[in-house]
Length: 189
Length: 189
Image (cartoon, rainbow over all chains, first blue to last red; front, side, top):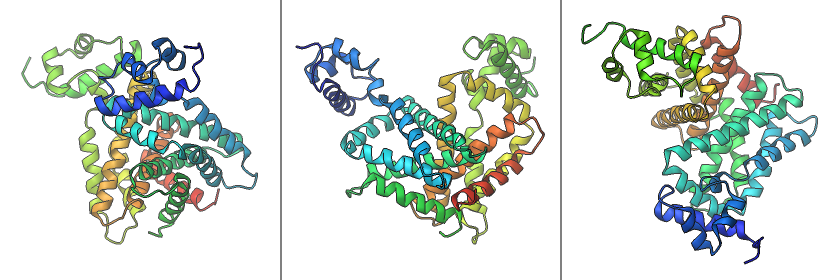
């Protein structure tokens, strides 16, 4: 077995999510994950700090990508539209992970500690986007309000994407949800 | 010492918050809290399940009060306005607890586990308000979007209330923040 197993990270993630769904997150061991993936524990720990990290890896990249998208929005873009565009870009990247996302959500919904960790992830996303808005010159509290509202929209859209039987794209659901928020805040519901 | 010490709950809460700020949440014991409050551990455990509970007591009452306020809003009220009114009512109740709230926020900000728990509390508030909106006939995803956006507004307003040196009322900051969200979603920023 080579030191850098090709596709090891993805195989470990898939094996871990399957086991978390089948047996529960708490009950699953790293040894079981590596057995199912046909890899060693050394390889596991080269990719993930622990079994919880499998569910929360890539978070820094998400924050950076969203902050960069806000920075790159046209100068004339309204702050809420810059946030909407950042979350649309994130949604496009998540689209191919729908089945993994669905498994992940099942695991998180079954464990209060993981739910709290997931909420922290969303709070950090709001904080990173508020920072990016302030760097565009958006004043407080507007920057925080828009970033928090944007994450609220994304959270609701993401849950619909996971839960709906149809095959709607996450990016489309996010876009619709921003329109619905605008309608609702304008009293058009 | 009588079995039901008058004001015991408040004395325990004040002693606990002081100690959490001075020594850190993790380092403080229930024995230290009861010593400072001049009460017994038995009395402490009659009021709180554990030392974390001191920071999160009364949560069920908050959810119920907000759900009831949404139910009691005039039939013609827009859903966002019903949510804003519920959070304004909550804010009036919190106003007299400003110093305690400030201490509590300091403690929570210093501890990742407590931050996650606080976020769960806010997520449960959004969920309870979305339920209350659905019972008023508001359809999904609008009910969830408005409830989550309302909590986002409250979160930002609450942090300003805690952090601002001036003596503005929380209810006023909440009301202003709802206006600012409306302006922002209408592109008026």
